[in-house]
Length: 332
Image (cartoon, rainbow, N blue to C red; front, side):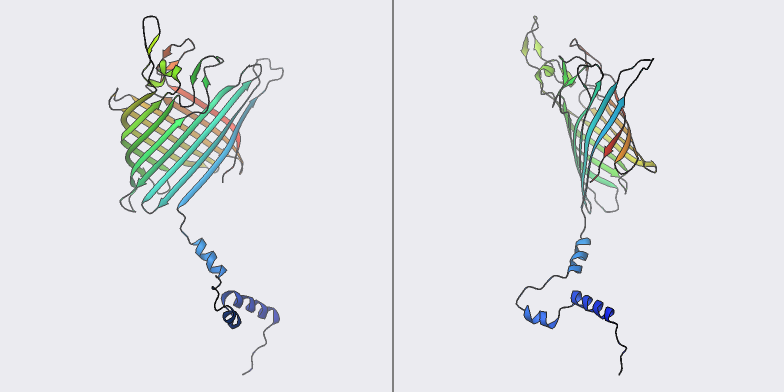
């Protein structure tokens, strides 16, 4: 039976395909004692079909603000400020098991023209890890346990006073360890964490601050002449209930809203007095690397007194921090 001649280009293509998907008799005989070669296409398919349990995000950034005046009749001081940051999210999810790890680092300085020292505008070390397990795939409730540690990098001062240290690394540091329940929607845009058993430990490892009873620790005992008989304690432990709410959404294209809040009350000492922390952030993306940020951070801690420059303590008071700036970020 006659056959239609195959063009040379098509014949070459068929030959290449056959070499990928089939072994010739010559190759089989020559390599019968050797281990068979892996099919490269099958390897690619196997690799792509492997389940991905880890979701890893690293986000370093720098936020800058600058103000300058030239012949400005209303007055003002030239200033420049910057905040460097790093945020890492490392989440593991397999079936009904969910493990989240968050690392948040920030440090910022502001310098005004004519000022002797730069002022600290931000200083955060925040480490959080949560392990959750749910009884069924369909359920949105998890049994959960959570660990959280927050402190700062360097010394903190009040205003231009460089003689009086009001905070430092691990002075204070707050550690929370609790168990309870976690509710989350399918996209993890909303999270509600309820922990009826939470141990909160406050560390004040600067002895000068501990002697003053800063951040809720027991102050030093002094005699009539003001001499210290017994040093102030460095650790203050509490047992209470914690409620934590997180919510994030897209307001419009390239504008994202993020809310983080926590509410804690101690069972033993002044139950009903709630330590409150609310953080609001609006991120406006200009392009892949440029981003504008508006942030507000409200804090109320019933154990944290405000330390004045003369050493006296007042409060507690509502603490508020606001940030507005444009920065550079990179996600990998």
